[in-house]
Structure formats: C-alpha cells, structure tokens
Amino acid sequence: MNTIMISEKEALELSRIVYDIKRFNSKRISVNGKNYYVLDRIDNGVNALTLGTKQDYDNMKSSHPEKIKNATVVFRGSEPLSIPSRMKDYGGGKEGLDKIGGEILYDWLGTDYKYLIDKRPFESDKSNAFKLSSEYVGKHLQGKFENCKFDITGHSLAGSEVKFVLTNYPQIINKAYSFEGPNIYPCLSPEMQKIVRSGIFNDKLYDYINLTDGLARLNRDEPSFGTQRIIYDPKSTFEMKHEDLASYIKKNPLLSRLDSAFSQYGGLTILDSYLKQLNPSLSYLMFATFADHDLGRYKFDSKGNIRLLDGNFLSSQDLEQMRAYLTYSGIGEYSAPMLLIRGEILLHAANLCESRCEQILQQLENLIRDVPEAANAAASEAKSYFNRLVGYGEFSELNTDHVESFHSELEIEPGRFYKQQAVEEAEEAVFWMKSKTAKFLEEIRQLANQFLKLDEELARKMDLR
Image 1: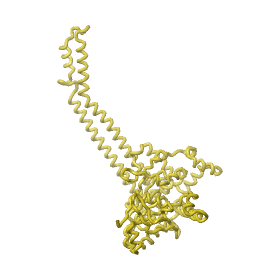
Image 2 (image 1 turned 45 degrees about the vertical axis):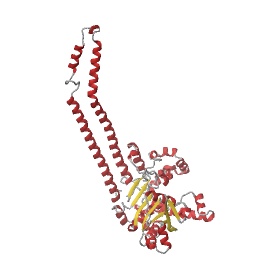
Image 3 (image 1 turned 60 degrees about the vertical axis):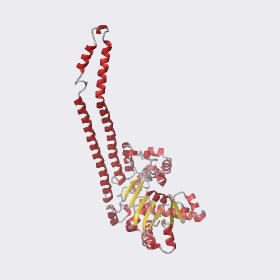
Image 4 (image 1 turned 45 degrees about the horizontal axis):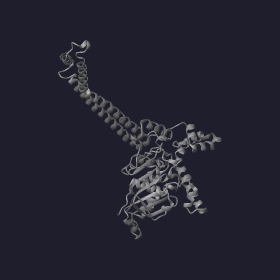
C-alpha cells in the first residue's frame, strides 16, 4: 500500500493517542488494525507526529522521501492538568516537573489564554504555537517530503492549530480534522478573515463541536469556517438546560467550591460577569462543562460514522432549551450551531405535524371504510331484535313480513343503509387531504433544508456580528 488516508474515526483516535507520551515517542502506532509509522516528530513549542505507511518509512530510511505521496500529521493539544500523573510520563523527579510545568504554562497561558481567549492576532508576535505548527507543515515537512500532501488532525488547542495550518498551506492539505478546537477566526489577519468567509475551506476542514464542551464553544460568537459538524452527546442531552446561576451552583459541586473560593469578591456571579467581559463566549458554564472536553464522548453509528446532532433524538422543547443554553454560553446568533438548531426545530415541527396528521387521517379513513359494514351490522341487529319480538305481548299481531317491510323502508339505497356516493366522496376527500398534507410537509422540509444551507453559508461568508 503506497498511501495512507485516514477516516474521521481514525483521525479521532489518532488525536486521542498522541496524548499518551509513550505512544507519542514510539516508532509505530496501530489504530483499527492499521499500522502508522512515524516519519517525523516535533516536540518543541509544538507537539506533532507525521505518520505514513511501512513503505513510506522504508523509502525515508533509504533516502527517498520524494517517493512519499501522502502522510498524516497529528498535533497534540494542551497538556492535561493532572500534574502528578503527567510527571511520571516525563520520567518523574525535578526533570519531569520542569517538563510538565513548562508545557502547561506554555500551552494554557502562553497560547490558550493569550490567543484563543484574549483573541490576540497571531501576527502580533514573531513566534507562537500556531506559527510553529504552520511552519512545521508548510516549511519543514514540505521541504523534507517535496511530493507529499497531508491529512492533519488534532484535538483542543491542536484542533485550532490544524485550522491555522490549513489557512496558510491549503495547497498541500487533503483534509483537516479539528476536534473541539476553539474558533481561531478573531486571531486571523483581516485579509485571511475575508478569505475564510468565502467558504474556500468548507470542503477541506471538518470542525467537530460538542456543544456541551465549554472549550469547544470558545469564540463561537465569531464567524466560523469549514464544515461544522455538531456531535450528538447522549450523556449531556438533558444537561443543556440553562438555569439561573444560583440554582446551577447548588447542583454542581465544582461550582459550589468556586463560589465559596470567590465569596470575598462577590462569589461566582461577579466572576461570571468578569468572564463575559473578557470574552463573550466565557461564563460559569465553561467551568461546569470542562469535563466534557473529552474525545471519549464521541459515539458512532452502525456504519462507523460519528453520530451528529439530529432532531430524531431531541424534542422541540429540548432544542428550544438548548438555544437558551447556547445563547447564554456566548454562541453567536448566526453561528452554524445555532442555525443548525433552528433548522432542526423546523424539521422537528414538520415531523411532528406529519405524525399527527397521519394519525388523524388514518383514523378518519378507518371510520369511512367501516361505514358500510357498521351500517349493515346495525340494521341486521335491529331486524334480529324485532324478529325476536314477533308474537309476544303487545307485538302479538306482528309477523316477520312486517319486520321485513320495515327493514326495507330503513334502506337509504336498495340493499344499503348508507349512501354509496357519500362514502366515495368521503374517501376522495381523505385522499385529497393526504396528498395536500404530504405536499405541505415536503415544502416545510425543503424550506428547512434550504434555510439550513443558506444560513450556514451566510454564517461562513459574512461577518454578522
């Protein structure tokens, strides 16, 4: 096999694996039965592996890197804050502490806060993790593997780095996968912002967002770019209900501790207000959902595809609650996630209307279909009843001919106790109602789908803040 192309499932798994320091430093990584060989590694200022096939690895070892046509670059996100266990990964002792301490400070303060939270332009500094990641692919790898194109993937900070690499070197990128990567739009130059809003990267970048993840929602008040893929997280469906801060604090142990810690400054309410001023997409909800910043929350369907948000899993009420939650979380009114939810609400209304109309029309159709049998049954029961009365009491002069005559007089039409034309007209009316309902619902669905397509393009192409 001369090339190695990754699926979204493999991209997700590789983005998770690179957090494992032992596997990051290994020569070979296996995912879903496929072996990836490390062709190149960077672990200074930016952490990434460049992976290829065994044949690619052999070509490189035999000094023929020009034969390598496709490779995968996997960036590692911010270092986990679990310092003791992470120290062991780096050998423990002072050396391990220095290494993990430096990584955390560089990732969380030097990069995440400085750029993704404070929205400082990448070009405002000569060197940063984003520029380093871009130069690693665009200069180092392109120079080393001159005929190669790349798939790039990463989670969290690495997902944001993936986006920046793509904006700088789209000509050598096949696909870019960003999992929970905060939006980098506000950090791009005005010229690049105009380019990304054109939609030019929509077919190359897949931007996966878990709406319950506070870090993934970062800067979603700004225009996004790429194809937004909103995942379905079954563990958090009913957590996406915005409540007043006091109620939320009582229910959430972490927030309760934070509220106590900040009590002398006015509690979490003051902190929440400050966070909103610092960045509209920050709030107490980021702390409440920090644990959702986890690739293990992704689920797959029977075909192996990542399950995405779908109105079939949610009621209209759930979707409306999600809108309120996301609005408070700082999600922009014209962001793809918010537009998706609006469209899903419309599609859900169409599905609900279809289900209810089908139920009513089926009941009506059954009633009409039963008219002949019900009418004949009622008439036969009346005739049988009168026949049983013949010769008794005050009906002693009544005979079966009288009953037969009376029964015949009850007939609306010869042999019928109903009007055949009326039944046929009723059946035609139900058929007409069914066709009109189907046409109406199809128009609603078309409208909803067009609504989604149009507004998602608007969100990508226009600065609607």
